[in-house]
Length: 259
Image (tube, rainbow, N blue to C red; front, top):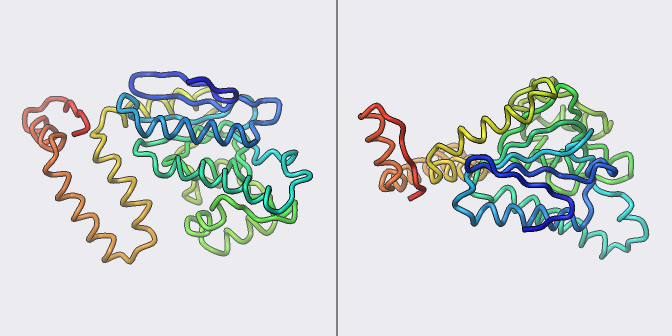
């Protein structure tokens, strides 16, 4: 598969995807959004890929939308651009594989929302996160405002979005947005190592964990726990579960096949 703005590398069942539009701080335009959508649909449908690392080239993970594309658009064209962005986020959130965002620099606006669409965020100590759309007279359109409000709480989210200020990596860690913070030179290797560890685990169980957490957060606790039990019963019947149990008893590494 050929891309204009993405570089891909395979490492032991892990696909490393690098956004490469460095001269624009990896800002999203329509073509880049379509390439990311196509890439994650490919990942979802490809058994050989079991985990993904998503990062950016240069100083930014992604510095939001390419504002140059907004200039001269009418309302219908603008909303079509936004719809393309939402399609991209959905392709990531609905992907059956775990996705680690390795945030190397600026993750602003749609770039912050892109990181939030992933399952885990590893951040360089130099990373900056923010929702600065207020400075354009706009609000975030990719779901980030509501995600941040649920993760940080309404008052912290209001302070972030109303001021448009940037969070440091350490502030993101304290707020529960970031999983780990590390020095820039260690970031990508650490993210790949985690993805390789995830790739060795049972694919169906990983998929179910993602689904239960993503969908359960909007349900009542009792309803979400009922889904947990139902999916557990289904997983117990799989070949992977029986292999995992047998490997534990036999004190060996499990060999999961995704069935």
